[in-house]
Image (spheres, rainbow over the protein chains, first blue to last red):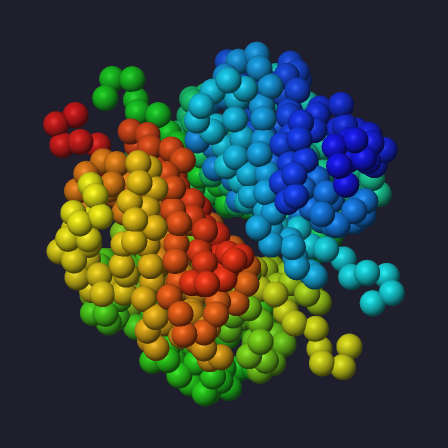
Length: 138
Length: 138
Length: 138
Length: 138
């Protein structure tokens, strides 16, 4: 799937959250996804909340898997490990660079770095595992 | 801090999210916190979203630390590892049992189990680390 | 499997490491396993090394799964998250209390607390995921 | 610190494990470290054990921190999340590429990919946090 079809898929299958995100770029086994600046994701002090960063990491690796396997709204997250390393900048988008490290029959593993737009150092890193359901006819 | 003062603290310091949660119980080094059923936290199929479960784990361990150290809105989450193990039930609250395993000068570590109300087996487990800032006069 | 058959299994299938461990207790979905004090597991200062604690967590959850599913030397660790919280005491065994939180068809999840014998507070906690291969005739 | 001084430090301060590893390369904020093939690190089937891979990840990120801050044998691992993604090849070294993502006053975070020599895809990934003790005169 490419940027257009992934964006369409996000709008159709994840209506509740599709407006939070924009897909910047799609590569062979990686995607770049943006968490759009929004007051609702902020914590006191103007920093982006942990759950919003988790959501960004989760959707980014999910979209990277979809870009490789096609439009199957079925994978489920089984594990996430996330490190919050720096305070995000105020008033800007977060940009997440995700890549797939393993795409097996049953499990996929990806990781990502999250940046405040315009900052050099990452604000968070995460690794995620997804369980891929067996194909219907297997 | 007890149930009343923690609930008050949550309302004052975390206005954006306070309405999502209710504190059921506070013990010596543990708390039970409830994610109130709300359409906005659901994913297709009626299941509670991963970010909402992450938010529940995060706030629960945070409140457990506060119950031990008093009202300091300063600890920050530095790491979370979360396993999503079962699909939550539809239409009910999630209940999180959190405990503190270490409360050091610089770091606190806690873990939690999350249940769908009325289900015997946990839907998720998480462990979290918080960085505790040095006291102002130390 | 009970304490005797698990101990026998460990000796037969994991000869290289069987001498490191002793199984103290086996319950319905939990085991207690001991890392025997041994100079080879120590780091400068007399503390037990991180890899030795990782090995203890890994074997303990593995044995807890075996106690539930029987002698299948096939599950593989796919993920481990471990927190090192306190310095282990010198010159004593480590004792690991492991429990299974999920035993599914494809994945099992367990967690554990590790104690220095005689200390009240845990020195480490870990959660692990195992991939369970499909049964040969399924 | 460069490759020579790091290698010397490893030999002096970590005598018990120094013979397991070789430092291939040291960059500005990254190192490449090799786990030398050795029967003692194998599991049934000829695959490298999980604890040996954990040890490789742990020492690699530790050495990457040292390369930036100088010879201080004091940092301690506080958290590790590791994903085992593929079975290592038999009879070859493992090669670990580690980088530092954050080097703060109190905490450092790094991650790494581990490869079987000669294989294109990584066998494991890990992220680790180290606690850095305060300087003696601060």
